[in-house]
Image (cartoon, rainbow, N blue to C red; front, top):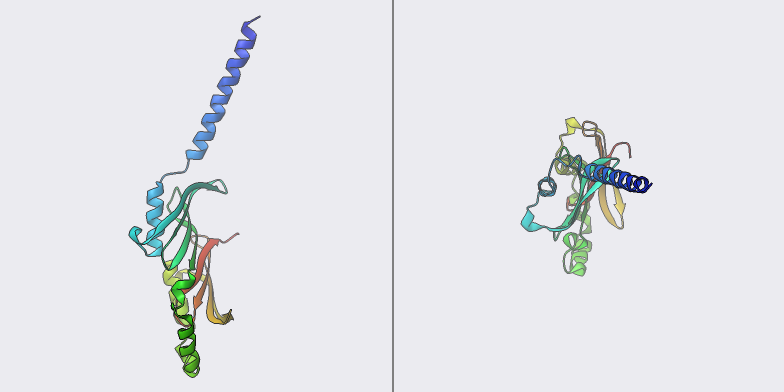
Length: 197
């Protein structure tokens, strides 16, 4: 009679060990590259070196059952956020946001004074739509022949003339969206996300 409770307890412990082992195996499966390798992939894509950045976060995550690394870092000019496939090393998503202080001069008043004094030549100093397109494609590491749905349009956001550049890379399954400062050519925002999102 005393054996029955012991058998039940041992059976429960065995089940717990199996479930725990399965959970650990699931959490570790799909991680073929290391966190350091994922960081190097993100840095290479951002065209910066490790000594130029400060990492805020490198974290293992699951994205629709896919093993990924979430990597966040910044330079003095921009904030970067990457999602890297932990199996293939492909960049699934990226977001780049320029910092305010990197676009404007330290003396904002002097900059605005000089731009108002020479407002007649401001429009001639804007980059072209083709230049904005080239900047976005270069940042994405793609050629124009490799993308589809390429759209470039100029608009004014908060008093700043910008180009919105959108395109898709069907091979990688990603949509790209960029906002580029039409005066400086700087990428204000840039990122990609899966096409079906």
